[in-house]
Image 1: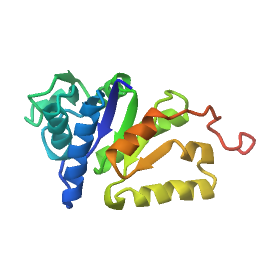
Image 2: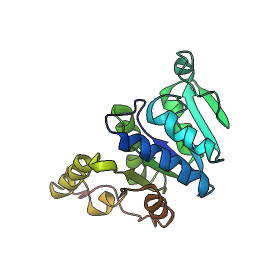
Image 3: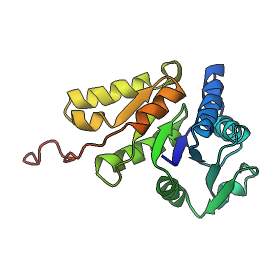
Length: 193
């Protein structure tokens, strides 16, 4: 893996562990020689993960729509900041530049970005791993929802396996590196319409 896209909050969150995890992820990426692709912000966990990767000598590429750059929340010290026209262009470019995806704690934007790349994996639009850094159980309810989707037959077990999860950055990066994608038809039962 040359680059990993990290989705995370534009706020630091309530618990100090979230900031510590973002710092550890940025450092771990740099130490493993993996570039960071992220939303380009200088605020919240976004700024923390970028600063940590940069301080450890890593490559950091930010991708941000012009409208957000105009609000002065772009990180000005990155290896590269790519300015795009829309949020849709942002997500497409982040996906194109990355070999894997990781979600740290975050809000609606983080959830949406992670679920979109996860859906693309389910549909076979890419074969890149998708992982959650589950700090202090932040994603426990999301994981339970995925499991419930399997129980209720809206998600195949093979597709549930697309959601990788660890509690620490290095084990998660190792899990992503060893990922072997399965080719499975998206639909549970094509005969039921």
